[in-house]
Length: 386
Image 1 (cartoon, helix red, strand yellow):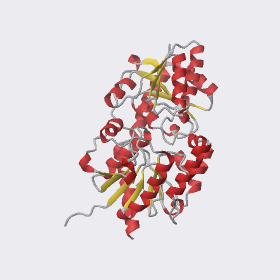
Image 2 (cartoon, one colour):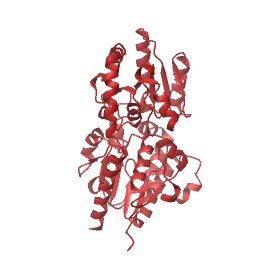
Image 3 (cartoon, rainbow, N blue to C red):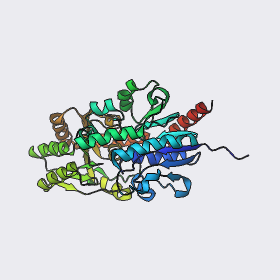
Image 4 (spheres, rainbow, N blue to C red):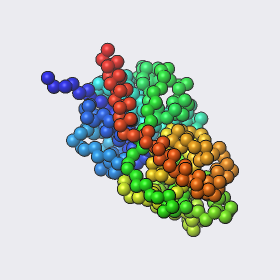
């Protein structure tokens, strides 16, 4: 008798090339051998590019991909609020066809029991306001504000409350903690995979330089990272900063490029780098830096740690669950400067931190993530059938 394979739909509205997408690729990887998996999206899907970005090797034949009817009309745009509203409405149309609906990032009202993976802490209005989400800032402009609310009207809602009835899975203890007050049921925690196999260069062969890795967006506070390291340089340390991320055409992207141009003597923009090229490049640096204080997990920080880089990170957010050494965690700009200079002054401490963080990074494995996901999904499907 043929084994029953449940049908699962994974919803991710628009596929960028950041940490949320990397996490979703490993979610698909965990599910595809035991379930019939369909990806429901409105744009940005390119399996070859996403495999390269995440370090996965998912085949077209192993999954299904479905688009809402209107995607062919707006296939060359990110869609905006109206398209997103239509997408969310269509989620409830297709949901009854599946044994389980999964939201890959944030929350979608499927109208049926669902699992929501929280790879972004700003998943509701209250959390957007708490963390000053750029979405709220954009939505205050007159035309876009109207479009945003019209998009919500188009999306509509079911009579189910996702926060009362559905299962929520956070990617860190911190994300679970700040989200728990909005959810009736306890939030499960599954740390994501830190992807890739990284080349570990000898410490003495690494450049005494800093790397900043990830998306170019306002919440990453790249200008603050440059300001911190500029202050370190003013104390007499001849360091450089290398930014690994794809610049776009937004006002924020342009502002960072302008700062980089002004500081071109020591700040280098290298663009997006993936796969073995990223592994080799990261292994040439000793240090990293992040200034994002609302990071739900921090895939980029995890990649730095796995590559043997020592990242200096803010106390606020989830990155301290990856970098569990006080010497690398700062509360404010002045403390960041002081901690960086202290570590720069002691190579013995650098080597100790380097070895300790390499050991810590092993817990974020594909095997641990996949088993946790499969346990949750199996339990949810059994519950829905019951």
